[in-house]
Image 1 (cartoon, one colour):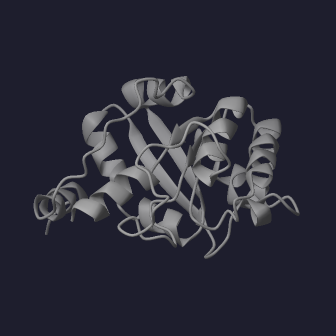
Image 2 (cartoon, rainbow, N blue to C red; image 1 turned 90 degrees about the horizontal axis):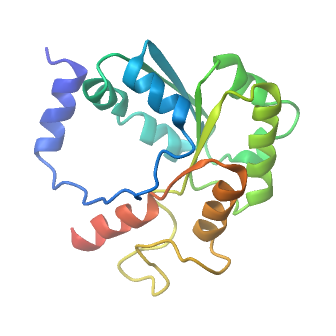
Length: 195
């Protein structure tokens, strides 16, 4: 008998909150998305990736967005395949059925199945933008993975500024391609370490 938003509030009331400090320069590459959220009438988000992206979409966060931005109806499209990343989506014009056919204003690319293949993510972004340059893009690191943040000596909360880690290279790609960047690995790992 609860609304989706009431269900979310009830679930989150039982959990310790995630301590997350967003980057001060966030939203710089999402001006159209922010304007649609603020003014409506609607926003379609395609979430592209693997089962982790599917799980992220199933968090029902669009209801929290709509509470914060009541002028906008937010629709989430889960465009996912298990264990699949842009290394697969970029081939055989798959961006058409997996992204473009849904007519998104925002494309969110993420998951843990990208095979560290930054070039394939770049190619997917470029194919999408070539077909519809109005689509804005957000790149997300994985919120779970194969390493244990409690025992992995290389785990860090902050994305390393230099080096060849996937998070570092994904943030660099976001800067080069003018995409929004969201690090989910740091907050997730911190939450697990403090649990």
